[in-house]
Length: 385
Ligand SMILES: *Cc1c(COP(=O)(O)O)cnc(C)c1O
Image 1 (cartoon, rainbow, N blue to C red):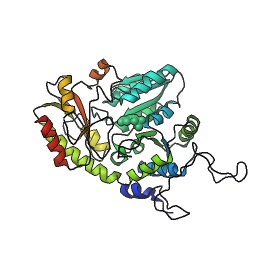
Image 2 (image 1 turned 30 degrees about the vertical axis):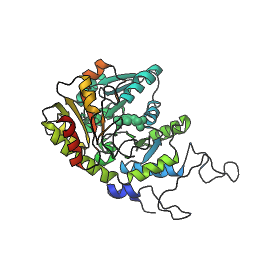
Image 3 (image 1 turned 90 degrees about the horizontal axis):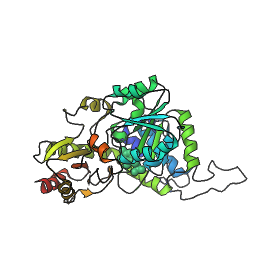
């Protein structure tokens, strides 16, 4: 059994956690489609009692994702939101959370509509400059929750600076690393306590699975989360675990192409007469470009554009006119998608809050896929002229 934790990223993506099946030598991890395991005698079993708690296919995937983030522990959940729900359950009434004002809409919804009812207080602040954080810290602050790059305005939050403030104040730092994927950014190495992924996106990569993951090094927090994982039960099935393991085997190849295509398209759109503003962290004039360069390996394939003089109707017409890009929620799959955040992914955020965060009605978000970039640019030309 080789320990792949010291190998390079692509080797880990393919091999970490994926032992040949001991009974047959099958190179692919079997799909253990079972809910329970036979016991020889009450309590005498091979370490598996009931599949909500443990499933070998899921365990293989968890080892793999842990290796990609250079973490000791990983727990996979039935969705990204399921994994964040588990993190929130570490908190108690009266606790406070500091988080960004440019979050995934579903995260904002869960914080304000679910956990606020349990007496947890949230501060949504601009994390663009990490110095803002200290003003909101008090004895009740337990969690700093950061998304970077942010969705959809691609702001970059300085993870290392956040970790420093979190450590000084004994606050847990959680990073939603969905947009970067473990290929581009590893928050644990920058001082984060918990890394979260919507595995649905780049890790799965084929738009066929909903899943979430948490990765961490701290054994005590891991034990608490593992308890919540099993007690509350948002655990993924073995078939989905298998599909994600298969998807991850090409994560490094896909990410290279996402980044390559993303750069070409960002450059094409930058000076386009129909575009008022473009958000992509790879531009040297992006306000936090230096931090992006420091903490990310490359800049990814997520780009947002604000259309010039475009009413909601014009924007809808443009969003519906693509032939290669598909109009859909989600991101990170092999196929290119276009999304209207104000009415799709971010519809649960009130308009005033959205406008403040720059999620205006004439903003469109592109998830650049891994098709041939000439065809993608042709598609943009065909729509934007
Ligand atoms: C999609 C997404 C989530 C939620 O994940 P699901 O798998 O859809 O539950 C959380 N954060 C970000 C940044 C996302 O893009």
